[in-house]
Image (tube, rainbow, N blue to C red; front, side, top):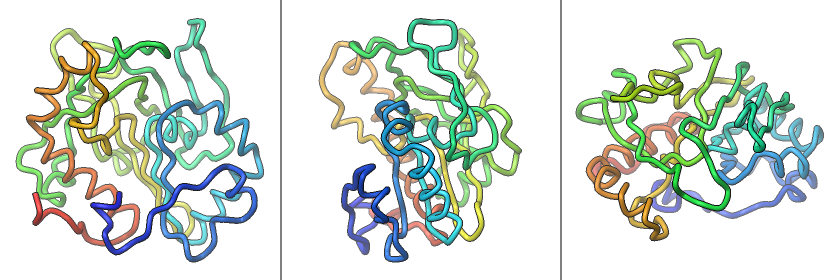
Length: 239
């Protein structure tokens, strides 16, 4: 974020900060990262979700990544029918449909389900972002796809790759508006630099695919930031 938004200051805030009124007019963007959505629900509750909705409604921007995307859908459907199941409505509800995952499986104690997922960027988005071609790869570990998205909301989809899977062709990145503000949700870790992945047997196997289209991933992430903030991309000339 610091590299992509050099004209903005970036700081970490907590659920307590949100509840205490930290999302003032001086804040342009709230990024909810990956991890687990249930702690967000527990710590923020209905008051925190409403504070975020009000922030966006009044012109703020929200980007939800992985867990932050599950949290911002109307319904979270995670690992349904397994011991890891988390299936319930969400109060933030920026996206009116369901966030369904995990796209490729998940384990809290291992990275064995992590993958370099194929991403098919919507052609119009690829052109606007300066991406040559529309296929790239991004890190996914427990991420979601989106059910119920209108075509106008979809920025990218999981690629339909050999072997098939329930996420194939499904929306991976969706975007929309609430009042004067904008939101973007991604089931993939488009913010993640491959070189910064911790070294595991599974991660090391993914690196070649991730690095091969890393410039394109960065362009897409720049586009997402710019779209959320309602301005032009700031970093393409540096890639």
